[in-house]
Length: 282
Image (tube, rainbow, N blue to C red; front, side, top):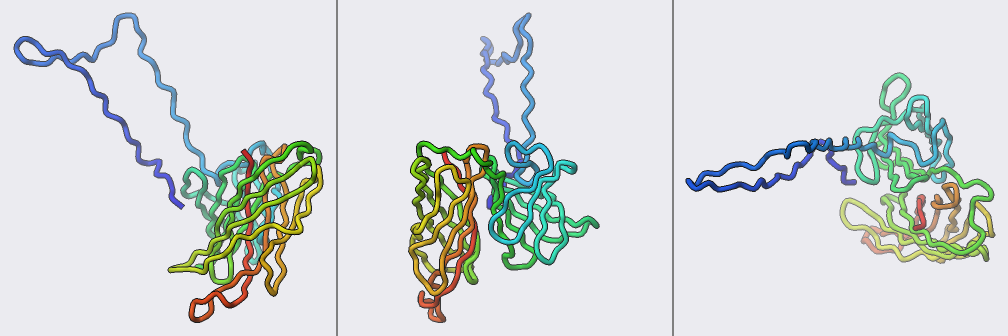
């Protein structure tokens, strides 16, 4: 992730016109007309990173809906910080270290002040986020979280398209990519696909598009589920729910087979990918 360097401020230089005297000298024109007040510039707002602010509409201590690995995520309004708990480690608060436009990096700090893990948050949306927790050299946990849409908040007319971001792991590989979900709210239909990609130190296996099958969604439902068209020795599935007051966004978890490399780097070995997605509609 590229982190914005807010410590570097660049000021544009102003070109001041000059008057030339008969002797060839210059006289500056930096003056204020009589009776004209000097405008006071508005203060520049201090940027706030993703790990130091709650999702939209959250003003009190809130436990978020989560999908993915076994993370419990909450916003503690009393200390203005996220708290997270995960297997094998006591609960800790997240202290932000650096941040950019869409995400932030921080430490998970226990009550005694010791560091439990590192944290990365991707929060380009208003009501939804994606949190990675690493307490070892390799990737550890990833979870999607958000403010769940209440019953009655999902539209029952029209349709909407959601674009989503993927994150997770697949065998030895890190997983990323995109997804597209199309909901017909009136008819209670869901179609879509995901395009997962793998990342490693050098090259990585190339994966096909995973198209939704057996999608389950009914009018007004706050949740949805389904499977993928890639058939392997392990079954595939995805489970999701809407987030935001009127289903503006969504979170989902998924599991699916993929063809991993053999010793000769040929895609012949079945393996399993697992991850989460966070999405939004225009």
